[in-house]
Length: 121
Length: 113
Image (cartoon, rainbow over all chains, first blue to last red; front, side, top):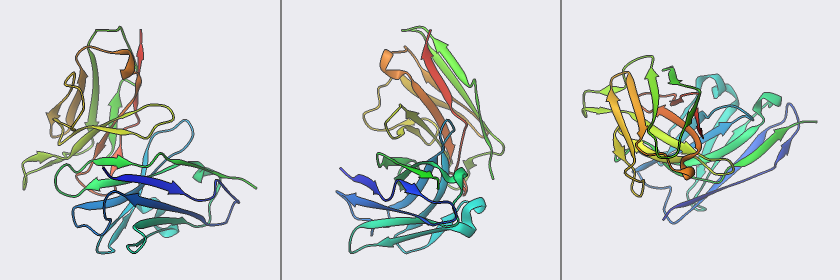
């Protein structure tokens, strides 16, 4: 059974870059069967999809975050990462990494536990 | 972007009673090439990640109790819990994966009456 785990700083200063890593175990990210997503939930609000990466390295980002977002992958470590630059308090959220089935379901079928990132000086 | 709108925002239901949540999309999420509606439902409990319940609008994920069912097509969808259990208290989200950016509804908070 695949498991995902987010890691990274819980506190980031305004204008700096938020960096998170998702470590995947029990399955390879180097598989054409899945996309690998980042999703966030600001306090008291709903879920917001940030973007995903495919095993080929192709990426897609939410347009409103595209200019500040970079998703990359390290197949040797079975990890994928999110960088979000020039953060503000509005980027404070629980950040989740998740797996998306490319063909069989289309839904996010496995999730990390989530990590709270607070943007504050 | 496809806008997903859920109703109601909050739903109090008695134990054992039926719960029905609506989700409407601003454009059709039915893909004629595979004859499927690209719509998923998730259950989200505090302190836990969201859990996939339903995909292709009506297919239950493995291990999901059969009291959960999804229906609808095109732009109008429904999640039904046939007999509410205490462990079903959560926020429920619909999500379209017809086109990127993927978008979620605002969530429906299901509680015990």
